[in-house]
Length: 534
Ligand code: TNX
Image 1: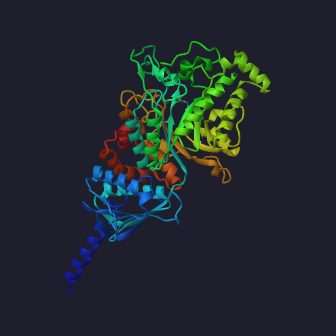
Image 2: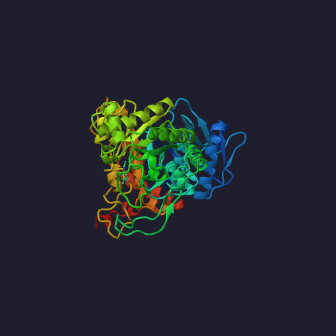
Image 3: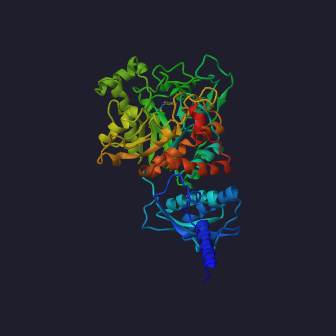
């Protein structure tokens, strides 16, 4: 071959390789959360064109997610895919029992795109990765294989639907966002002082009275109120619809029914549940209130067990969250029934009374095949070995619980409170937050294993981000608080030991196009760090 031709041929090869491979700076795959391993093939994969088919090895288990993916690809890429009723397809989905349940393996080659999952959930996560690849590269992917599995089994997000009410459609859009980030638990905060949101058939007043407040305080708990009635609730049918919607996205819904504190709305509906039996109202401002469930009367426990009987019918989740946080003890101190209970049960004080309350409800849950999650306050006064602690007042409660052999979900307000501001000087630059400051970078540095040794680590189930909504009344605002901090927490939960902030920044710059394609109103600060420093 003459020299010139040789050079031309070599250049041609190089271009083809560079065009098809995935290792160049621009071509490097940007997946969030970062996968365990990506191997680049030095050639392009098949091009997906309209009419490309998805073949399912198991029609029953995989069809639903294929249908969801077809909708995602149409919305995000304008790509019209269909399910191959027989034979092969350009995209192949199958279950591979040699992989762990949530793991997947994705291969993009000339033969097509093959996703194998250890279970249907794994295949689903492979499809979420494929959404990201298509958003990055368009219909012709560089050849590659991805092997991936999460670090933590529990990856959660909470939405408070009590301080402000969100519609079923808004909750579905929240769940869509969780799915994109491979989050697998939706913690649904359903009862609080400012509203009881779940229909309980046996106690109709809970939603009739408890789901409405007359008005809402303005700003940061000022003395000015908006004068606008505010309310809303979910029927059991709607709640089941959410459970089903989430399940199709491999997300378990954990309901939270708060006790013994944060009970004003329940007491307003049924005053006999409180120690004094009168003068309760659905709260119109924020904070912690002395109106709590009476721990002395048997009727309180009957009521709560009847409520939970309906709750567990609606929610199949193994975990039921019973709150347990921020329960002032004043009313118990002056309540004859509560004091009698302390005596009869030989409890030393009101903290032990709280513990009695929670233990008794936990026992009931166990008898009904469920497990309790509680905020870290339930540690005070003692807990049973089987309770799972959600650590929110920093990580200390979680660390103590893990050392005591209790299971723990890390959700500390140092890293996981998505109602806090995202920039250092928020005044005027950010929509309302409750206070505090948790940047994306800060959320990213959460170490759920902090201070725990090898033997203690297995007790950490995972991590969760919380959207408390005292100051968040719209879904656009929820998204602003959630994104992109949820991506940081998702990466802690999925990719714990392979995090790298600079690489995360590079990947997020690409990943955010998916936010845009879906119209998500993410916060910009992380993407303009210079401005944030001002
Ligand atoms: C503490 S976290 C609370 C919530 C508030 C939140 C505001 C927890 C168990 N209790 O009731 O909404 O702070 O950040």
